Length: 588
Image (cartoon, rainbow, N blue to C red; front, top):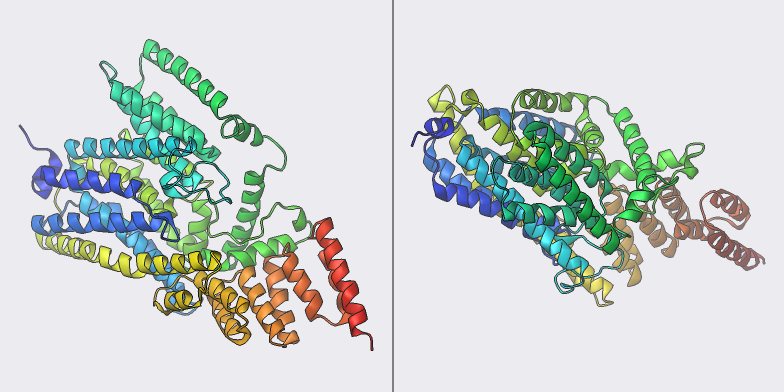
């Protein structure tokens, strides 16, 4: 049997390597833990472990196809550029920068070590089957969660907007992953010959779970990917008609069974003031202001969440900004990857990524269906800031690049090829210990402290352990400060909230700082902190109430007048009562 171009160039790819790749894809998609602050952290650990095993094969092979450079080098350049604002001190260098860099490096090293496998048709087919298989498992778990059949594994957190979040902890990310897999499953079903039952069942499960996710941007993304597959495969009229009728019947059944997650979500897209659309308008306007402040260099890799509250607050305080739909919290992501990457990397940092897309668009293959779905989804969500979605996109791109005989050939210089193999394999072996140390362990400590705090126990020792870790997430200081405030340790709370404000520029952190200063008797400093909170969080009743308490009595009417723009009628009545009580108390 003749070898493929990739096997000739990069050395024979063993069946074990394909098994490891497929197992990592499935395990990484399914893995999660309620004992971590994010479901994604467990997935990152699994991918790091997979990268390490693939790294061993890479070191053993000792050679690399030249296309691997096209796959990861542009990303490496952009990521290095994204760290420059922090290295040179233009913005505060924090934990989130290196943790974000580690996540990207883990994904890139995994894709780099997997590239020789994807230079062969056998490897590409194995990957596509693994992606569809992982989506089927994720979809089955989502269906079981919708039926309330797995309450122990998928608890009801109360604040979850959608009923189904499955193994991603987020209905949008769930829908985005299924949307990327659906065109691949559709391509398999449209292959010439008899349609297999497994292919049809896989397609039905993925499509059903996608509908139940209620993620409308994922529906649009899946439709774009499916349209590409239909144009590419050109199925016969009979087969297309049969699929069309089946899809209509299938969708109708799901609409009847789950009208709130399907029909209501669809209708709300066209209603004035739809929360999802209105909030994105607010996010995007704030992100554009961030881009205007640093158009060339950006604010730095991983720094979007640290600055988003300030810029989103500026948008709200503009004339007419109060009419924008907004929530009470800052956002970690812009809900548009293009805008968020542009804000973090700047125009210069985006140039290598544009060149990457320019090279990739010349390649051909069914993988474009899944990649197109991810690209469309990224315009209204943040899939490329999620390790499973980012890795899925990179591996599909690797399949496209691996189809080119020239890119599947070994690097021109054998010495450079060995150096690349050594670097990729060695770096991949370091991924798991680094992810466990910098991501999983801090996440576990933080989640443990939060659980004790919510349960009403003494959470201070747990928070102290969490903040003692070198890679403690920035928001742990905000929660630790709140616990100190509740315990009456006002001076300690003020110190912790000061750290929180320097690492996470959020309204909640400034609110805690103002409250601790007010309780410590420093009303002037409290007013400064609370005003900073209101610039970022103008709809916070607690902030306006604290400002009323910290301000002189004669300033009460002015505070009340400013609050009229932001507070609800019942909140204004409560603030008015607070102002009236403060006036007699100040009378001699």
